[in-house]
Image (cartoon, rainbow, N blue to C red):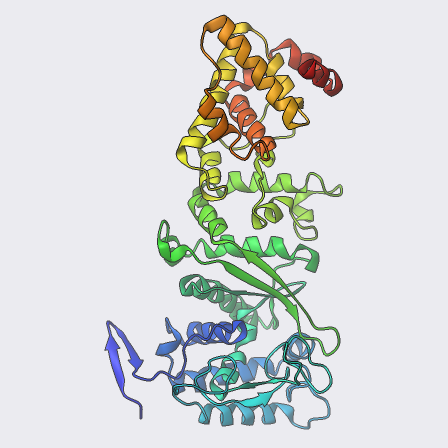
Length: 463
C-alpha cells in the first residue's frame, strides 16, 4: 500500500496514481474522474475511486445511444461497438479491470507519450482519439499506426465522453489553468449525468451546428465564468492562461480536428464585464448584421458570429458598439474603457485622451450650432479624409476660441500612434463618445434631419 500524506483536509498519495499530463484527452478524462469521485485534483484519486467510477461508465456506455457516439466519434471498432466482437460489453469490462489492476505510481521516465512517467503499450484510435490504426495514420506526425500509452492514461481517456459536449462535432476545452478546466468539466459531467438519469443518453448537445462552433465556445466560456472559484481569480495572475477548444471527430474515415484558441485577455475581459453580460450580448448580436437575413437568436446556432471571430483574432470590434439607428450606442464609455484596456491593451492616458478630444468636438459643435464636422467624420472613408476633418476642427477652434482641439503629443501618441493604421478604430471611438453624450442634440440638428450624402460629405472634407 502506498504511503499517504495530509494537506489540509485532503489525503494525497506520496506517489499519486494520476497527475496532469498536458495531453488534452487524458487531462479531460482525469478532470471527469475527479468530478465523478468528488476529488479536487488528480493527485487525490485512488484506485477505489477508479473502480467505482469505471463501473458507472461501463453501465452508461452499454446504452445504444451512447454506443453510437462511441463508434462514430470517439473509439471506433472498440469492443463496445464492433459487431464482430461477441459479448463486447463483457470484454470491455474485462479490459477496464485489467487496466485498473495495472495502474502504477510514476517513475522517473517512461515511454508513454502522454505522461512520460510510465512505460506504455502501442494503442490506436480505438483507445485514444485521433491516433492511427492500420493504414490510416491520422494526425500523428511520426506517421505510425498508433502511439504508446500507459494503463493510467488509457484509463483516464475512457472517461472522456463525460467531459465533452456536442456542437455539431464533439467540443472539448483544454487549458493549463486547472480551476477553469475543472469548472468546465464539472458543468459537462453534471449535464451528462442529468441526461442519463432521465434516460436521455448521449453527449450533452448545445444545439449548435458545426459551422457555429465558435459561438458554442463563447457560450461555454460564459458558463465557466459563472463558477465561484473562477470568479475568485479576477485580477489574479493565475487567470493568465489561454484556452484551446478542440472541435473534432474520430470517424473511421475522414477524422478531423479544428482548434479555437482563445487568448487569456479575452477571458479576462469577459470576467471583468460579467455583471454587464446583457449589454455585452446586445453587442454580440450586432455580429450577425452582415450575415444572411434571419433572427439573431436563430443565426446564433448556425452562423459564426463576427464579434466572436474578431476578438478571437485580436481585431477591433468598436463598430459593433453602435446601434443601427443613427446616434444610438450600446453600453457606455466605462464599458468601452474596459474593452480598450483589456483587449486592445490601451493605457489610461490614451483612453482618456480619446474621450477628452471627443468631448471637445461635441462642446465646440454645440457652441457653433453645427454638427457638420461630426457628420464629415462619420462619412470619412480614408485616413486622409479623417485627418482632414480633425485639421479643419483644429483650425476653427484656434480661430474662434484660441484653444486647439489637440496638442501635437496627443495626436501623435494617442490618436494616431500607429501612423494612422488604426484610424477607423480611433474615429469610431470618438464617434461613440460623441453619440453617447450628444445623442439628443445631434438628432435635432439639420444635418441629421436631412441625412448625409456620403459623396457630398467626402467632397466637402477634401476640397
